[in-house]
Amino acid sequence: MGRPGLSSAEARRIALAAQGFCDPPIAGVPDRRALRRVLGRVGLLQMDSVNVLVRSHYLPLFSRLGPYPVRLLESAAYRAPRELFEYWGHEASLLPVAAQPLLRWRMERAAHEAWGGVQRIQRERPGYVEAILDEVRRRGPLGAGDLEDERPRRAGPWWGWHDAKRAMEWLFWSGRVTTAGRRGFERLYDLPERVLPAAVLAPTPSEEEAQRRLLRIASGALGVATERDLRDYFRLGVAEARARIAELVEAGDLVPVRVEGWRQQAYLDPAARLPRRVSARALLTPFDSLVWERDRAERLFGMQYRLEIYVPAPRRVHGYYVLPFLLGDTLVARVDLKADRAAGALRALATWAQDGWPAATVARELAGELRRMAGWLQLERVESADRGDLAPALRAALR
Image 1 (spheres, rainbow, N blue to C red):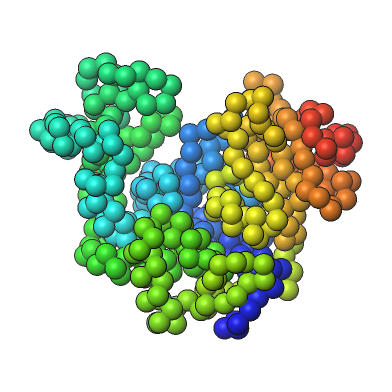
Image 2 (image 1 turned 180 degrees about the horizontal axis):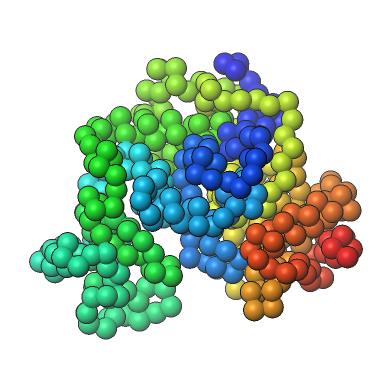
């Protein structure tokens, strides 16, 4: 694989193989071994609170394994023996517990890198933060809502946190508490030594070694990537990522390559696979690691994909919660999905084709994947609205 150049099609197939889309199907009901296989590919699952379809971190497993029991992920994250933990990886993420020591340098930087309100509570009320930690030590696991505190000083739809929540987030960012479970989508916090396996609490690697290991995970998950792609995976700083990448190149752990159509220098994982073909069929959450870096998604697949959740409804182009549809080695369509649980329906609110693909073929395959998703979500049927250039073909395929 150590070659001077790759075609754009080769880079795309390498990326898909690295993300697990060329792995053989799982025989039977996916279990923890299947979960480990996916996490071994992607390295982490990004979390998000939007629940118009299903919480985002559940979807990458479905995209790669097909229908699986949701309790599989919940058990691995919140029941012993724990295999996953929550922390700031890409964004809020579920990560293998073995990655916890690799992020302690980030925990140690909380005083400088945590959000402003979270920093301020530690700076302005350190005694209060310690009192909150004592409560967790004494009564944990606890949610921020379990602690009495004054009303929010500044109410609002997104940031109406009271000081107990800010203190908990400071303790979480700095690694002094971790997530023991969830109550709905509310975190329940406890001490790491009461949550994580004892083996994880072992020696801490140096900051430089931890960052090199995180970049190796990113490289393995991406297959071929630019410097920005690599550092974005775990949100590393520009200067430190650049230094660590140079060290990995020197050690032979990254191979500089040229990729057709890419302006930036690319780096190849020496263990990356280049399959002859990819036969994938998957709907991808906007927070899937295959497409979360939008410039990379456009470089690989030629799709300009933007998240429009925060765009006012009249200005949205494709919809509120739009999932790209992967068929073979290409993103061939996008669909705005909603799980209408009260009506028992998976609703395709808008469906759009990517240029150059036969509408009937794409619609037939998309209808099959939507039916499979509806079954996994325990919804009785799939319905398609008439918005989008692919909608008529999808409605016909569903009939």
